[in-house]
Every structure is written in structure tokens, then in C-alpha cells.
Amino acid sequence: MKKLCFKSKFWALSFWFLGCSFWGAAQNHDYIWYYGWSNETSHPDFAGGTIVFRHNPPRAWPQRRPVNLARYGHILTDSLGLSVLYYSNGLHIYNRQNQVMENGDTINPGYFWQLSYPQPYIYSASGLSVPYPGRPDEYLYFHQRFDSLNVPPNCCWFPRDIYYSHIDMSANDGLGRVVSKNNTVYADYSSSFGLTKTGDNRGWWLVFGALRSNIFYTYVVDSLGVSLHRIDTLGGNIYEGTTLRDQPSLGGFSPDGTKFAKCDYWHGITLLDFDRCEGRLSNPRFYPVDSTNSSTSLAFSPNSRFIYYNTSSQLMQLDTWANPDEHPLDTIANWDAYYELNTPPFGDGFAFSQLAPDGKIYISASASSRHLHVIERPNLPGQACGFRQHGFPLPTSNGTTVPHFPNYRLEPIDCN
Image (cartoon, rainbow, N blue to C red; front, side, top):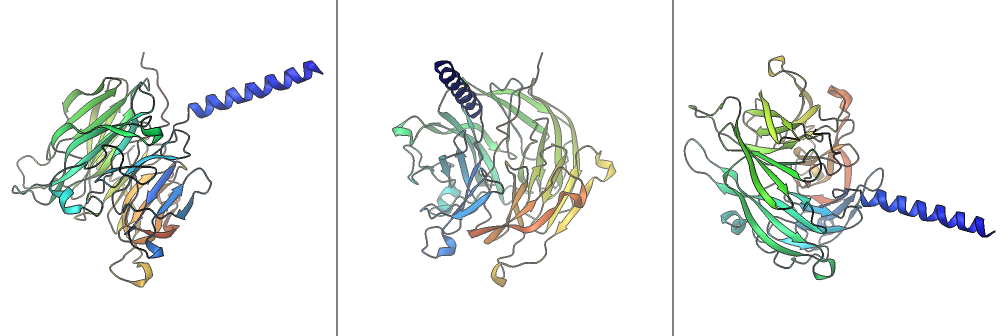
């Protein structure tokens, strides 16, 4: 009887350690999404909401919070995907109790911060957060401010100045403290940036392109902080000697970290290969897109083969295995002219996209809407991808918000 009892305890402890090992290795920082629209009002449709990807299918429910997350909605969950660590509306960094975190006020400072306040930040690229390599319970939140460039032939609003803010979640009984904020990585106009793990998974690579240029910057993020790794001039510069305007839109890394995409919503997509071991970009190619629409975004399929590029009225699929001269862009869908509550101008067009933990791509609507669009099978070509307009219902209105994440679950590779 004693032997039986001992064996039972042995197996129980073995399964417990196995479970701890499994969950300890989990990197589910993208399992909870916040969204909202005019959350500060009392109207029940504007209560804000939460989407949780621990469930299959994911669940969405209303969640009133005093922070408006329309358009800009950054969020980070703990590694188990069970609870929110912090989130941001682009103006401040908030803890899970919806309070401005200690020293978390006034990120992305400047004219557009003043213009946006007290509403969410005007820029839709809501930044990326990663665990600080080698520092338990500490995180780096990379974000980018918006500015106006009124130098002919350019105009309008552009992403400028890439920052990071250092957050210690062990402070204040787990509510966190911002150790430092608005630390400048790059002080100029640029494309959107991307983050992917180094080959050994001990750090991260940060990559972005300069404005109106074929120059690309690669930084390494490790236990010592953020430092410049290399600067590359790759491919032809389509803007040089022309009056073309570079209109940067959302881009970033493929899930496997082997491709980086820079998007210009007036001209097209620049795609480069990336070596996670050396932190090196190569093989630039440009895929032209005939568009003058500002509501654009792109997301990679889980297998990293396809890019889904959208304007507010059209969704296209780009096969990255094809050469640009093979015309690899395929139109998947045009907006079906659906209006939320039959009330123009609240059109349910296509805004901003993100690959989710369930392997589907979710696209926010281009105006206040109680739906997300869904690409059900993004690894498949053409219509087989299963795109459904307003296919994921929300219990409350969303103001074009989806958060953005790197691939936290990317496996290490052999760099020897």
C-alpha cells in the first residue's frame, strides 16, 4: 500500500513538473486583445470590449473601461495568456487596473500628442512589446510617434522617431512601473518597424526602413539594451529623382522571421529576405500596387508565404514565392458596401490587420463597427483562404482597433 501511495505521488509530481515546464515555456503574450470606441460615454454600445484567444473559437465580451482605445490599442498579456500586464492608447501606459502606470504618462510626445489628447493617439500602428532579454518580469515597449512633413513634394502625416519604454512588472505589487520612457532608437521619419527573435532566441532583431529611401536599419535587442547592428542600402530607390511620395503604412516580419515587408500605400510593397542568425537583410523586390487609399495594412499568413494587403475597399493576396514580373497580386474581395446600422459614413470597410493565435487574420472595420473581418484559412491561395466580411461579431462597437504583435512562439534555429 505504501509503494502504491509512493508511486501515485511520484506520478503526480512528475505531471506537475511537466505542466510547470510547459506553461513556463509558454509565450502567449498576444492572447488577450482590447478594443473600444468612445469608452468614456455611458451608452452601452460604447462600453469597450475584450477578445480572448484561450478559447476556440475566441470569445468577445463587453468590458467597460475609462480608457478610450479607438484606433490605437496596444496590449501585452502575461506569458500564460491569462491576464493583462499593461496596455496603451498611445498617450499613456496603463496597468491592469486601468490606471496610468507609475511614470507611464505622456509617451509619443509632440504636436500630435497634444492634438489627440484626451482621445486616443491618432496613429494606428500601436507598437510592439517584447520581454526584456535576460531580465525576468521586465519588458520593452517599442512605439512610434506621428508628425507632419510639409516639405515638397511630401505632405501629410508620417511616422517619426522610434522609441522604447522600459517597464518593470515586479514593481508596485505587480502593477508595474515605467523605468524609462521615450528612449530614442531612431530620430527621423521612417517606415513601420518589425521585431523578430534572434536565431538562438536569446534576443530580438528590430528592423525598419528610412523614408523615401532604400536604406534599412537593423538593431539588436539583448540584455544590454537596444543597439545598432547594421545599416544596409538594398535595391533601387523608386523615390530618387522623382516626385513620388512615400506614404508608409503598416508592415513588419513574417511569422518565421525570414521576410521583412515595408509597405507604401500609394505605390506598393517592398519585400526583403532576413537572416535571423546574422541579422542581415537581402534580396529586395518591389511589388507595385495601384492605390491611393490611406487605410492600408498588411499581415503575413502563418506559413509566411502569403501577404494580405488591404485598402479600405479591397483585400489582396500576394504570393511571396512569385517574382514581381509574374503579377502575383490576387484580389480576394471588394468591400460589400455594408454600413453599420445602415448609417453612412460608418462603413464596414477594411482597416488594420493582425495574425491571431488561432492562425486566422482579423481585420478591423474602417469605421465604428460591431464586427471584425476574418481570413479563416490564410495559408491557402486565392479564394480558398476563406475570407468572410464582418465575420467575427463583437458585442460593442470598435473604432478600427486591432493590436499588433511579433511572433512570441518562434522556435530557435541552428546558427552553427
